Amino acid sequence: MAGTKNHDFHILPPDIVPLATALGALVFTSGMVLFMHKLPGGHVVPWLGMAVLLAGMFQWFSKIVREAHAGDHTPVVQLHQRYGMILFIASEVMFFVGWFWAFFDFSLFPSKIAEEVIGGQWPPKAIEAVINAWDLPLLNTLILLCSGTTVTWAHHALIHGDRDGLKKGLWATILLGLLFTSIQAYEYIHAPFAFGKNTYGSAFYMATGFHGFHVIVGTIMLIVCLKRAYNGDFTPRQHFGFEAAAWYWHFVDVVWLFLFMCIYVWGNWGAVIE
Image (cartoon, rainbow, N blue to C red; front, side):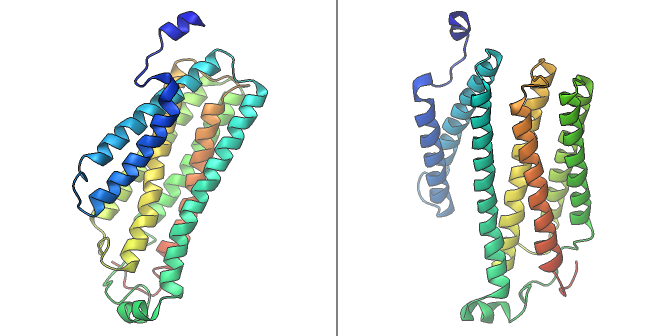
């Protein structure tokens, strides 16, 4: 253990990593407030907070991997890791509940002032055209559903000791995730309405945009799992790092199904299609 400790790479002093990570998150969110309100420091503070946050996360997660190699992840530890991931995903669920709540509140229960602005209709009268749900959004839905099957393939391959299948399944899932992100970026570039001009645009971009961010995070998690798979990590009995990434990916899939049905299909009902 002493030899391992001497070769550890520390970006931050190990004893302050939890505190530094929390402070990094606080500085980043505070900096984004400065940036959005165009206040002094808005172009510097968020990047400083993000740098500290990423450094703390990298060092923290690297230590968890080293603990797994050292055999420190006993069944009790693994159980608590699962509880932690479940609670994290539950918090993410509530995060998206907020965006769905906003979308339905704007569309179904607008205030008197908002009702006058949107013209008593949804999408608002200012929206001349909407995105066709049965075009790129449907394609992205099929892509994410396929990615759910490929990550499950990788998981079952790992459980049965098929490391080649594990790598192929991860490669397929990562490529599908990148394809989804590319198509959504193309959709945003050619969208017939802008962000922030009205309640529809704000609710649409916040909900789908944050989902897209979660797809990027999930893709990064799977890339790390792929790198670890090539390093010989994970066994059929101990592979929670991969399992957590797979849970997260399935969560992203399910959220997208709700986004597709509620925002792209129901939310655009009766509107002019681009």
